[in-house]
Amino acid sequence: MSTLRNKVSLIGRLGAQPEVTNFETGSTLARFTMATNERYKDKSGQWQDNTQWHVIKAWGPLADRVKKNLNKGQEILIEGKLVHQTYETKTGEKRNETIIEINEFLILALKNSADENTEVTEKTTK
Image (cartoon, rainbow, N blue to C red; front, side):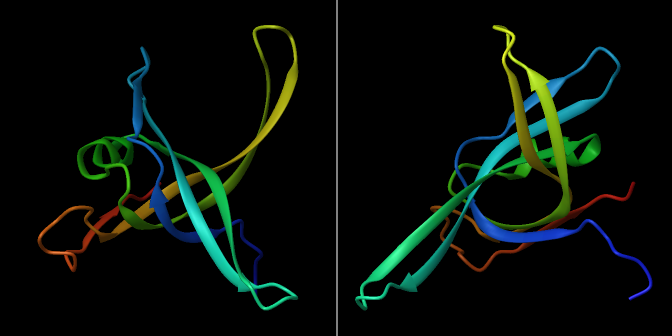
């Protein structure tokens, strides 16, 4: 391994419609949440579900493609990097957030579609 990289890949479902913001600078940001689920047996042999929620952001042309192609409930695969952000609320409270900034997504299943095997790939290069 010649270099260590900040890279993450997840498969999950969109928790809500992506929110898109167009900035005065001309930049576009798409933001959405995605749930991943892990199923395991606990010590007593009962199945347990562990759902994790992730904040996802996409910039530029990829944000436009997110807005056009992604909908709440769809199963997707994303690839991107972890970004840690610190910000201050309106009340002056400092908060930390780790988001996933994507550079690629793949639609695995179209929700409520007659053709559940349809796949769409969207990529961007930076």
